Length: 494
Image 1 (cartoon, rainbow, N blue to C red):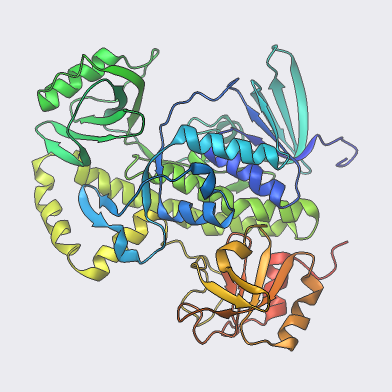
Image 2 (image 1 turned 90 degrees about the vertical axis):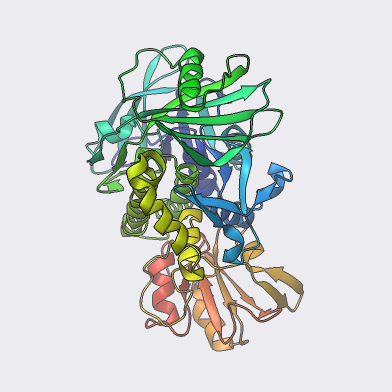
């Protein structure tokens, strides 16, 4: 009950795409009940998003999810607006994966969230949202058309670029309109040459590469194809004609598996939270799908929000913890929309951009520039403001480090599987462990030393948040108790 009104679930999530499903699972790991409302009766099997970038591979690994994807092929090949990049310069145990379709990602996440106890309701269409000071009423039409109202303490819109939640709750969504309509088509029954980082052709740009099961995906970017309001889906005939205009090749004999249309419109909400309502994923940011960043950033939005919202719902942390979701993820959204607009200029414009492409190609020959761009598009550049300190990793996600404990070996990644805070005591400091004891219900303390030289060299201890970001070291300006209270709430909350 909230102010006398019954609550159906502390959190309602609208949308069962990758961001909504990831959020539901993270909430359940944090002990929060959640209802997910999805208007589609079943998964479409479509794969607008393709592949898993390095940061998403890391966060899936820290939750033990990677084995569920089988053994997908990884690649060091990347690009920035068609300028080749080599992800091996990042010295990360993971590389980019370009073969996992969004349909598989959604299947894995939905099965995982359901196993954890998320209440996923398909065929439920949200019709109206009425937030107030204490919660949110959600008017829903069920599979049989019956309308009912659900109530929650918090609502999260993960309902895509045309988000109803965003529109009804008054979020500002400024940006720039699209300049062209582009197509993606998955084809079967045809042999085509790969164009994996894009090929400039007179009138535009084309891309193409093989997926699994004999499917070949092409992307068609024709400068003369202006955005249009469609009442019907794009037809295969339209894509055949556009491909022939740009390449001279006839693909009409192929069998289309999926066809999608998109533009280069770019928009970012001004606030990720308005009271009891929050947004994640494409509901918060839309952009050119350059390099597969959209789905990956959306999943990472949910990893940032999930543990915080669960802590507030449990009563461990104050509501103000949710404000850090905006302060941490809005800058990520700004960088995302900035770099995709820059890539659009390199990718989509005509011969006038060739000098800039040539300069960019020269710049990536410098190791620091190459590494900077690779970190940007792979999601590794996100660094949060967790307070002052001199440790080089403060605010970044903790890399994979093998640790030696009294019981054997573990890794920083394995320690994050339960989605709890972790204090790693590398100096066997009894006073440090005693200081963390009042948070034992929320933070695991482990005494361990690195197996070999690496990121923890010379560091006596590190405090990791449930999302894996490093929140404190002895070199921080705050003491450990202050950091624990900031991220995990007061000592006594019940």
